Length: 608
Image 1 (tube, rainbow, N blue to C red):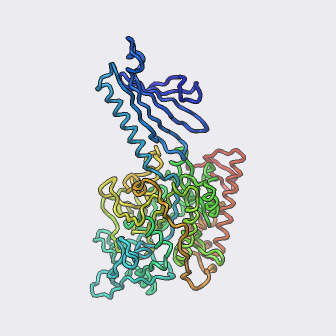
Image 2: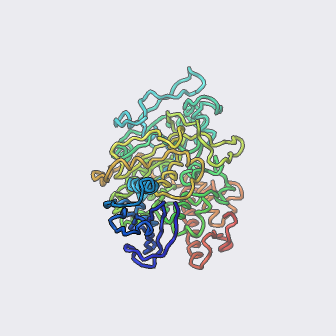
């Protein structure tokens, strides 16, 4: 079997000068004309028949075998590649082609048909990802098993932690369905998570999920009481509605047992590049790993990042490059793009991370009111539901990590691969060989059956699990990206493309609006309080991009002394200035691989 190029006028080609492919299979030639029009490359017609030398000695067209397959092979992200339309075979008489010579051809056609069917079963063309902050599955959704009757692996009310995990006579603190406004923020560092899941600092001990109360007591009695509480369905009515109407993943884990930034890095790159906590030096340089954004761009597709306060995706160094500057938009632009049918292959939504009077935080990070998180999910859903792109969209809602809140499902420790062989820093030297605590994950699409519950994946390995690396792994499959997996972790992670291929057409009964939400916090936003660790990281990111390196090279004190209101104002100004300067650099003709240095105008990227 061999390919050869020919220049040939062909009946279905728009221009007679366009090139054709010829695939030679024994005595059979497959002619594939290529049509190039408006950036699209398509193969609208394939003729399969004997080459002229087989048709000599008075043979006529009736002695040919004609197989017509209308295919669409395209680089346009709005058109499915390999879409099988029709197959027609004419009569065959006096043919000198033997059955054995047709076998390679038939195998090829079978392969093309399988490709066509596979693509036809992938109705999703727009993926929207919203990553919220610091809540566990049981804390947000666990009580929907008992109180809503959902067939999920949730709570039954008998789950408890003792105040001392090692003392069976120690008083127990059990789960309850009375979570409200949580303040302060429970512990969720790498060390805190280790104690929570193992009941001690010994990571070789059995996974007991028994140390949440014990660890919280190192902070306060109030924190210890809060970590075992979960929300009633009526307190999170938007999630209750989405869980009934669409799909819940009840075995989705954070990518590592640790805090926000390392887990967020996994969502779009399947690695944290060795980070188990916030690394100021790495922040200044930007994390260097390849991302799913790079894979999408290399495939000729597009993406957009919509942000309220600041885009945390700028922790990736590559996202700071000039070639990506026009991908960043204010959050409200998402609503416009959804209404106008302009959503890209991947839309990343970043909620408001700073809690202000008149502009409450809606990321669900304690001490923020989860009612505001419910409101932003409602807003996003209703915009997507009203969009002309609704029937080809998938909305993914997940959480970066558990935030120190209790979950009863043991975290996976068997067969979890290190993404890239990078070992975490001292003193833990983590090998990235176990996952973090289970987090809420809901998926929304008219292609998802009502009341779907997804647990353990079917592969690609016997130990595979759903975790944040499942997002880039599935995006690769949905869009048939030719690039390699980003790391060993997304190659291992479970994928979920099967949940929206079970229906033959999109549902028409999806609600157009979701329930209204009542606030849980009885006070105004505490905008004059000190910022959280996550918020200080966002300030450091803004300082690096703005050229204010004195804020990150010295101690943390100047940043930690900022109030929430001051930090929000600084971050918004710095991010806007960086993006504006980057756009100006593009207009001046700067190389797209460069990164703006706010102190020295435009400089070549030293780190790729």
